[in-house]
Length: 186
Length: 190
Image 1: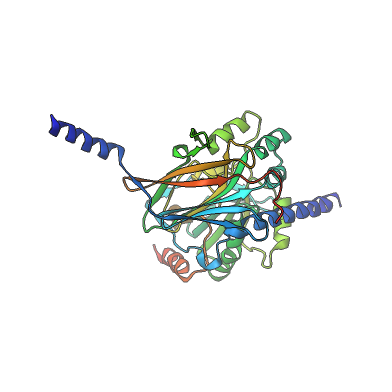
Image 2: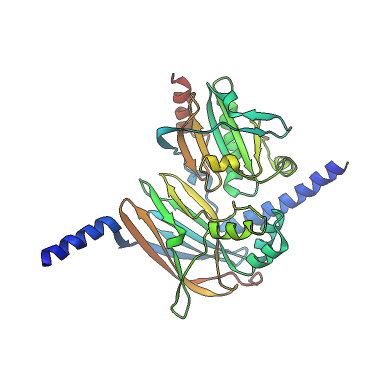
């Protein structure tokens, strides 16, 4: 009961904050069609250190376990407007391609499961990919993330091959094609 | 001797890079819902948008992150802007907040305190939160963009000119936004 109450309190705070953020940025809101779909190649591909992070249920996910799949890693937070805007497109992409050969890991920064739980309640479509928690931003630092959102595409060998800083239209056909090409590569 | 000087000058330009004044323009808007002002550059490789942020909003953001009252009071007493940067070019664009200056009405040029400097100050107080602020420096590839708070060491309602720079290849571009106004202490009546 206490946990439930805490979650509803968090939901109210998160909702208020989101309303403030959306109001603040409404003048500057970038229309959906303005979201870029480009990913910059990382050349040469860059190795990243392995990590283990908990999901919403406290289960640990280790990057090494995803070796052999193309992985899209998205660093985000609930208070970040472009992170919120790109989340539905990320889910559409995952619904279409996710499975044996493609995975999405959304790594939340500096928030906890209660906070994100409340945020999920506001979404029309709840993400079906793992939401991981990096409360002290250690993994974000290892990836060299400077701002949110930032996304990385890892090839099947676990190397970073593409990077995108800022919100993206993840369900754009060119993004899908890039991922399919990586999935098909040896 | 003259030839030697020219050689030195040319070498200096190569070492230091070239400088250019950007030729885009600035548009100023007032949000019809809130009355808050924003400034946006047009036509440059790096598009910058500055949006006034009310002290109450700053308090709300930092309170929700659980930051100590001392930090919240201090930051909300400054002039804070939401800053959005876009790479609008067909190649990489780099910026460095440490190179930016704000010019107060007395003509003095001042450094903008960087995110790293804020985080260091907060770390001394046991707080490591850093994500809300504009990163110190970034290289934006095609299609990249970012946003964050920029905090100017002036009181709400102050006015200044902002001189900011960005780099494309070896050329540094400079643009000045004149007459930037910090958000008022309280929401404008409109």
